[in-house]
Length: 379
Image 1 (cartoon, helix red, strand yellow):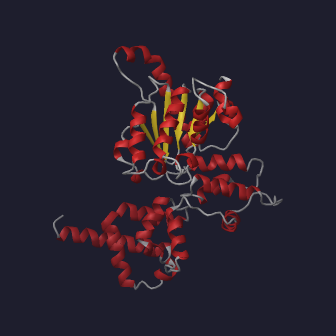
Image 2 (cartoon, helix red, strand yellow):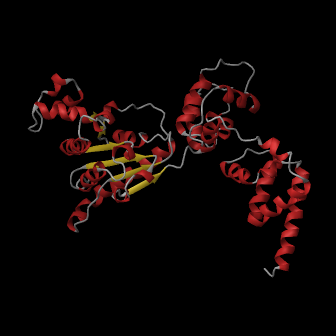
Image 3 (spheres, rainbow, N blue to C red):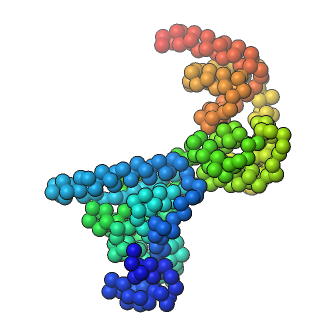
């Protein structure tokens, strides 16, 4: 990489160096809009979200495949846009995607500065054009757009501008890969979303994501069983798990061997790490901060009359007998509840009532009554 390109990362004096015919004013303008990161500046050892890195590795193979087919595709007039959209919940490690490509291709990253693009004293549309122009002048390059919903919100001039720029920025022609990330696709124009060649949906921190980040942070801390912690953090966001791992790492080491599950649960509760990636946790937090409170499930189930419980079991069986049976088996065996289990129990909390034998008895009774009703109704 030439010194003329690197100068845009420095101070105003360094930016005075002319590059590509640009004047001092243009250099300052680019500095206010974008940041340039060379492959050498990307940390080699960092905690990345494993599932996001896998998506990036998949896309790298697509880039390599295009390189092999480039001549044939050019002859047929086929273009490869190299435009990627990353969608996921809050706390996703979106940056792991461009960082992986920067190291492996290798390729430099050009990233919009939020304070430059959203500066009230500057037209955002001009800043967006400057960023894309800088990427094209510095090609081959990867242009990373974080928080797409904030940079180009629906029904805005910024959305129109960024659509125009993306249409004219391709890997096959301008040698620019465009990667955008968002946690709120509902706030983005459909026309803009449709311009991306590929969309990767990160549904949350997978079990492997959680295990790997815990293994990296808690390496050498044998008192922690990372698989147990990963189970207990089902539904947590990636950033939440990182915060928890750091909190546990800072705990004093114990000499009593591996911690029990109960002790780990206690430490997680005491860590004060908020699981903002878990929608249910956030909903409960909002209720508490608003001064309202939902009755505890344990108190609700005590109020179910016997006859009413039978009716509720009948409704659950009528809705989905197989799922009702499966959740009851999980409860009876004391297995960890998955996100799917908790979602089912949020609709049917009465299943928590009574002993394991009571649950099976009511389930079989409800199934028998349900089958009888179906026969009477001719189903």
